Image 1 (tube, rainbow, N blue to C red):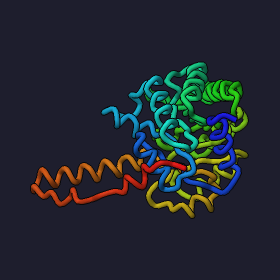
Image 2: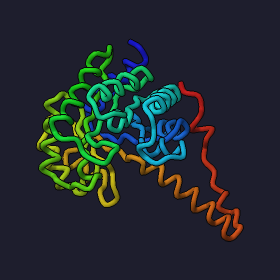
Image 3: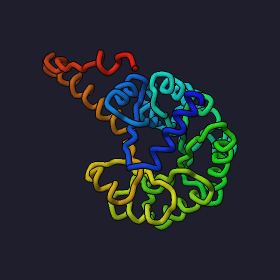
Length: 266
């Protein structure tokens, strides 16, 4: 079995077991830290990766994301799933191509959302066609690539629970392996979604919800999106502001055990 196939099988097995957190590194260094801290799998963050390029979310190309996926796959022994936004194109073939490209780069999973960069959510029929194309591309691979289908209503200003459930049910029927509606605000809404579909549900962590709350509501996987990126960036910005404002260099006293985190693997 190839290295990629082993990662793919391990990723699938995680979804059949206990609920787990899949954190989102923004670069190779953060990926290695998260691996050293005991993570079982990793997922890219489109916003966090865009930040490393000095851009806002949505301004990354498929070529750049594939290169990023390859870098994370090389640096870590963990399964890597990729945030593919809308597949870098509105048509179904773009979604399929995005899956093939990151699979070639070493990823074993990827997500496709139903929101267009032009600022609108695709109609249901078109959204399903895009997921069907992504699933077909994944099934043509020689390892079990895990497709996550995203319904973007809640983070795009349309908090419509019934429409979100309808979309997730349609994506479920289209063959998606994991279902995801980022931005669900409460345990009750998470519970309703989880009871409405047959596939594992990914939930986006948010302040005010504990891991125990999310698991009790039925979620199988919890991601943090760009959250860890912004925690790190805020710490950097606060330290830089202190230096420029007061000239106090004591904020530079922090140290991290890089030798331990980046040590050779067995």
